Length: 591
Image 1 (cartoon, rainbow, N blue to C red):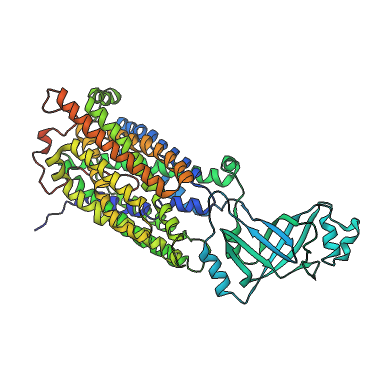
Image 2: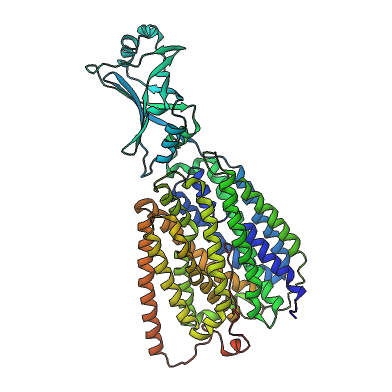
């Protein structure tokens, strides 16, 4: 008969509900920010700052929780600070868009031309949808065009608008205002530029033949346009704010503020929550994995449904509708607070000098190597967390056929479920056996090797659906890594510094590694594209794998110690761990 520890049920519920509550928004956030009109550089910059926030608040509030023994109170407060700002992001509007096109009238014909800049491209499926589904329709585009004085002679002489033959009637701002009439089947995509062949124009309610003879001066100017088709406007509109000017937008500061508060909330909830869990487990820290598994189940299950719901509720809309995921977050974390309030937790151990006690562990060279490794893993993790979905959406847009927009979020949900159930959960169960057999040093090398192979496989993708088998490697690059990191933090933490130590380890990984990795990945993505970025990261990971093995071999050669306390778990810490139980697989705000 299976015996259930009822005291730990609220802890299991917390892991399930908190991870389920963050799963709908956290992985989709970079693509949502993109939809608001921000570039990869801005996304990379934002995700550089967010881990730094986590790095600062984790040890800070860990010290406060340990010093004043207020772990549970801070735990509940920061759950609120996670959910509410996330929910408010839903109300941030997109940044101002520019719809400037070139108007060309020559050789008896007139057209509008739009060519995207910044290395972006026009979705050919969008053009096909307009020209095929609405082939018999007509597009009306209100145009405001800059002019030169001689252009009004063309309007008077060849367009037969006699009102403008008198210079007194020419607008003071020299803006030519007319409405272009474009048959939908006269819209073409040529060499990455979108052409609208104008049949005629309308000025002051009258029809205007937009005729310009071949022997006349070339009539070419730029125009602001507003067409009566949402899909067309989506194709020709782009952010008119340069990356260097986004700090002047209130949308940027609202987004930045809400993300900072939410990230701080998640960081504290994770680190303090893990400390509470270890305190409740007492002399059985190896059972931590049995609690944390419920977080993975919550993450994997809800993320799958979230992606499917976004696709379903976005059907027929120009952009993805993320409304449902924000409501899922606020409701699920609300239930988490109710369950967390039932925790029967009392903090019993107290350190009289937390900073001094924690500082003692850094005199060991192996520990310093371990923390450097956490930083390097943070680089790779940043690329996956923030830009994998971006890369897959770019690959989907390049596919032949026009159905990718209906399934891409569903695929992303499947990916997160595979990462969890196919990769992470098995390694949670096997982590204790793996670490006991090969030790922390070889586990670290294995994780670097896993990242290298995983990134190189990403760089070879052409069809986004082939990403699914790659995601099984998440067990090595995420599950095994966190098993190593969290067990290390738990074992070496001096009594009374548990929350501080959990916060410190997470801060090094996220605040330094993920932060710098986000900045580097965002800029590389912008300059060389997704495939080349993954190739560069993969190559670097394999080089670091070889370097790590060599360094450890040299360290072993010059060291006379058979066991190095503080780096690998002490032998006595492993004596009571069953082979099929994880030691202490760790958590993150994302998983």
